[in-house]
Image (cartoon, rainbow, N blue to C red; front, side, top):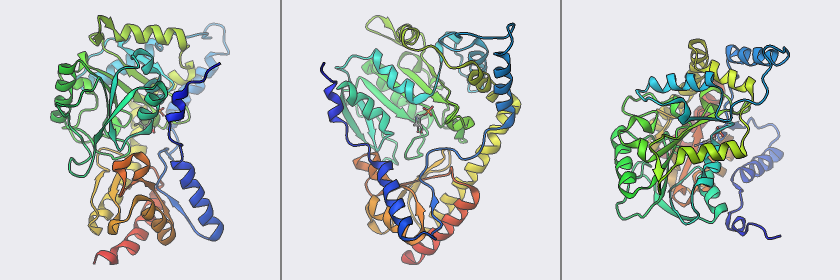
Length: 397
Ligand code: PLP
């Protein structure tokens, strides 16, 4: 037996374990310290009870012969795909139900979609990046081209006509930077992809945080996107489903390459390798899109958005350059005093007992930057920002 040797080209996945190691070491030395974590990418607010009631009801359905469900449709139940169609209509996007594929989350689909792509494709990935795009392609042995995402382009890289990309990853609002593409910027990407016959894999996991009407929720709001894009979305951050697990992928019928429909290929892939998301989870997911469900999710989002506002306001007051926080739960800040990402991590931990994520962990261009998240508690976030102001305010005065 020979192994997939591409795994050897993967870097050690050490970012979060190294953070945990440094925090544990600090806590051992300072057991009394109240360490505030603004590094997590997980939600903290519980799921709205109305949504979980739908799941409880669905579990009850499984106990009665007349409502029992066995295997469900691999693409997802019509009640959920119908709810998603309506949700997209709210953005002015019309989808047919068979272009929507319900899954157990965006991460799995982002990885699984690569089954459809030849190994010889050149893959364009922003740096810094959500590491899943890079690592799933390295596992298959694909060539990766990195595009520079930096302060000069406000962490929103635009197409370089010279770049010979076949597959393009875009994430907007972005993890880790929180930056979000406008309609005009995304139109340029769609134009570039159609011209090159490339395919955009658009990650919309944070679309529910968008407030700015100039920032599209879906790439399919852009004319021409149906011939060049697939979209990956998740209920993890929208509805607090990080533990419940549900997402959806949209593959339009017009997305064809080499005479084949990628939608048909994805259907074939899913019906062969996936048996669908559990019925109670899909009932809960459908409840997310009801008026009560949406209201419950909005209540939680308001808490995160207020955290983001407080973080952003503090950084503005301290004169620290940052992006994100407006259409996103992530704030991407420049490390004060020219510190590297890990130097600032240690400095912040030791002086303010606050934990964030070093930007260099997301790629070489992340060096000198730092990610804070708005997923903390309101009290923790406020306290963390007071400490940040105390520790870094004077330096700048
Ligand atoms: N895409 C991005 C950009 C993310 O940040 C995350 C999770 O943090 C995911 C996808 C994964 O989403 P899911 O929980 O649906 O697998």
